[in-house]
Image (cartoon, rainbow, N blue to C red; front, side, top):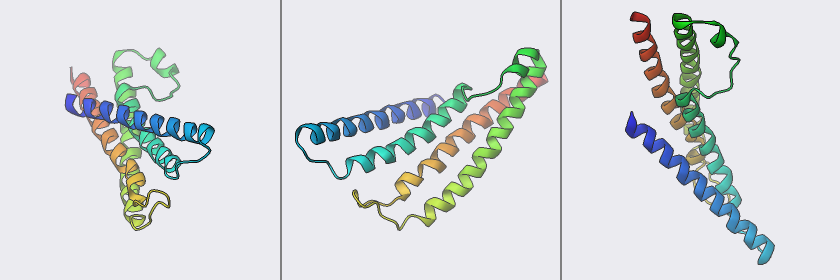
Length: 152
């Protein structure tokens, strides 16, 4: 699990750094050199999709998705564990749905090329199945831990 966490963190850092660099270079070229790099906007938009799905996986890992925490504040020990188990099962179902549909859509769009970069749009749409897979791993891990807590 530590390897997965580190890999996701490093990948997020690389994606954010490349996105920021390409945007900064393109802004400089537009402002100072009066021309635009044709593929920079497309690259930044594509990396934003990856940033979103990998960031959502980190939010699942860190339990930092937006939530109404009233029940969490009111419930005690086993109640909190049951609530956490319910939330993780709900997220798991959503992530499995996103994985299945993400694979279908990514496969269906694989022949479409991005106009400026000339690569398959599957590289962008692939962020959904990858991010969803990581979310599933994190959810299953949390579900197992919650079940262990309920048995104690």
